[in-house]
Image 1 (cartoon, rainbow, N blue to C red):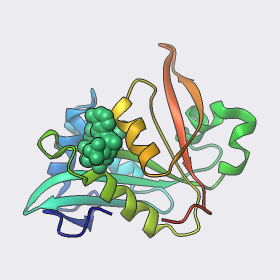
Image 2 (cartoon, rainbow, N blue to C red):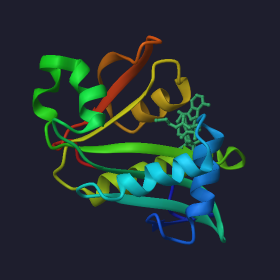
Image 3 (tube, protein in one colour):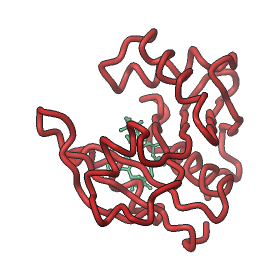
Image 4 (cartoon, helix red, strand yellow):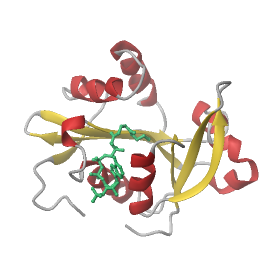
Length: 175
Ligand SMILES: CC(C)(COP(=O)(O)OP(=O)(O)OC[C@H]1O[C@@H](n2cnc3c(N)ncnc32)[C@H](O)[C@@H]1OP(=O)(O)O)[C@@H](O)C(=O)NCCC(=O)NCCS
């Protein structure tokens, strides 16, 4: 893993951490969300079961962030994303979902996301992990494949027909 001698360190964060501004900057830069919408989203995710969040800190600067929580039927993420897999989702009830992963543009291709993923995986031993990314997001798909995540299927999201790939990291796939 790239953490050894890395110019950043990984620390936990929550919606009331001082790192939130940096997290919001990264999140809003790669989505259409406003900072206020993003803050609300992170606060509500933090209420969910087994919420975990981490930031990569380079000095005081937030270089990357990752957060998620566990999911099940009735949860929007389950219903909108994983549910689209139908029978292929049978073993994902109660899995832990990595809702968001992002790296500041100036920090990309330096192992930040890989390191965050390794921390996520190491913090949830024995758990099946799941995430989704846009089908067109080649950077993210390459990253997840290189870290041993497996593509489970593609689901259309919303009326616009945007397609997301669901990736799974099985519990028996050791870090
Ligand atoms: C996807 C993203 C998180 C990758 O972060 P990163 O810190 O640059 O990733 P890493 O440095 O750990 O890259 C690990 C590997 O992933 C692959 N990868 C990363 N970015 C890539 C790109 N732009 N094109 C192709 N492959 C890429 C490479 O295999 C890379 O290894 P290498 O640099 O040795 O070739 C980052 O580009 C990002 O924040 N994008 C916008 C938000 C986003 O798409 N988040 C994921 C959505 S779920």
